[in-house]
Amino acid sequence: MRLSEIMSSPAITIRSAASAAEAAVQMERARVTHLVVLNGGRQITGVICDHDLRGVEPGRTVAELMSAPAVTLPANADVQEAAKLLRRRDFGSIPVLAGKRLVGIVTTSDLLALLGKGALRVAEMTPKWTLPKRGPTHRPERRRP
Amino acid sequence: MRLRDIMSVAVETIHPDASVEEARELIRRQDVHHLVAVEADTIVGVLSEHAMRMAAGDTAVRALMSAPAVTATPDTTIRQAANLLRGNHVGCLPILDPRQRLVGIVTTSDLLDLIGKGVTREQIDGARHRSWVPGR
Image (tube, rainbow over all chains, first blue to last red; front, side, top):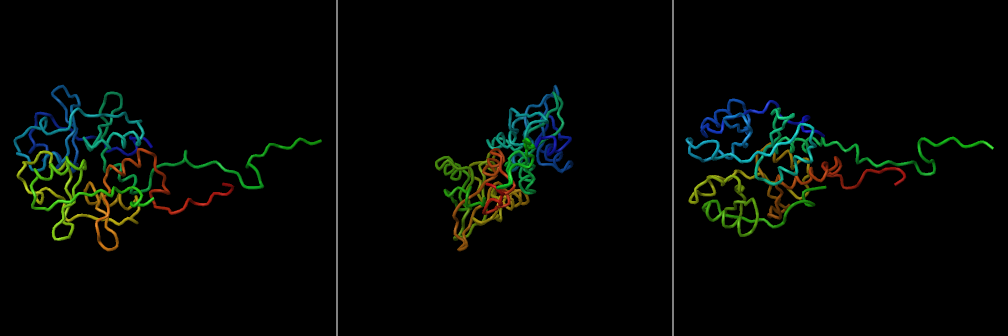
């Protein structure tokens, strides 16, 4: 399954120079828990989540509190790859790119939702089989004497 | 597959009135990422390493822990565990046996590991036996 199928889009962003209070307002307004942090040149520099803002002085900047550098993945990457990256625990979300454009964000919660729905695709893991004493479904025609 | 198959049996506990400093020391010494807060033999919350990342050392564990703790049993399925973690915004589930004793812990990372390894739907739903496939 591809990230483009499970990501939240569009990703909500915030400037790295913004304060913790502004980030909290932005999260509340957009009803999200993760923001992608952009620098002055609109480049992705990190990610910040609601846990990072818990119990900090409201005047601290996003740049001080964010997890950086941001690890990004292309939209056609597999969810397994995202799970392996998020496993490292340094961050809880991955910005998703199409080329160089930010198109969405995938969080740990999105991956847990997949497990919760039992929705991982397993088509490629289904074993091939034939019926006993009946042979394969498509049996080649016998040669007639 | 059930939580008994993936849980860590090494669980570290801490008193909710302990300081973040003590919690950090315990986490570093025991090489774990989550602590279970226990008061008078009752689980009252869980504390993750991430939650105290920015906190001052003299803050009480009680102020930062997620409470009340959401718990599971060794027989809980992977699917149920994922829904519990996501629905309650917690990073770990303490595992209690039928006599309410703490026997293990399962974290979000354990479930991400499963996705990373390519878990099947059968395993998520906790099937005890593989479904019958003719000719195998």
